[in-house]
Image 1 (cartoon, rainbow, N blue to C red):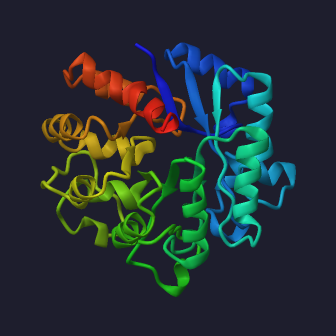
Image 2: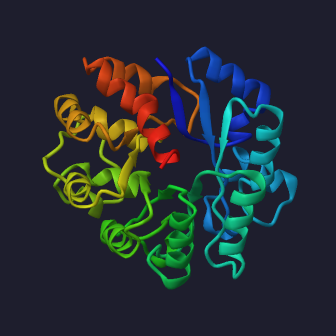
Image 3: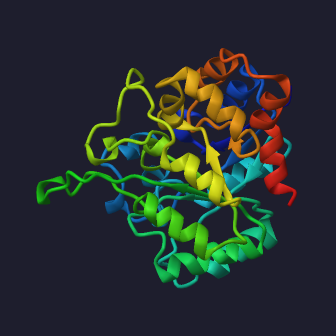
Length: 291
């Protein structure tokens, strides 16, 4: 079965190109969506420079420069699909996205991960440009209602689930992939998003959460299963995970944002049909890029 990892980064967590490709081969991954990350240094966690190339290279664009994505793509074009998301606050952001698409062949607008509200006018302008270019947008959401003035280094990105709905309404021609704790916390219809700690995999899901409601209402929303947040959302309630993946089989993309194989191991344990697995592992990713 063809497998596409729809979310990963160059030089991420100590993986250079050779180590990255060896990891893909180990887990049967044919291609990876290779995403950049642009934002100012004061917007990401103090520990992040230990796992990203930007601070080491001395770049000013952010933790994962687009130049590193291009470098991987040029050396192994058969293994990677190029992604790029400029910081929407850059007055040249839309032009940069168009250039990345037209000159370098970028196919995904991602990863959008900035300490701003994604429904502000500058960001909506960029998101609509991505839609015109037929580039799906991978968005990282994270928020914490327990912030105090001492917690300035606590991360928040993008806004809330209501921000996401506003974006889906405002940009109907653009496809979006929800990702990260601020998105996946809403697989459950409860108030755990109001608490500072992400729920463990032992906390059952109360259906139907906001994600399911938005998927039923907006055809331009997709789900990025990557990272601990995506995996944990499924593992909280394996029975509901089967129900969720079956209902939204056309809108779920396998993705990692890491280099272990726990996502595949869990998905393969659920007894899903071959047809559903094919969509999750590669079919939906290919469908988005072939629109």
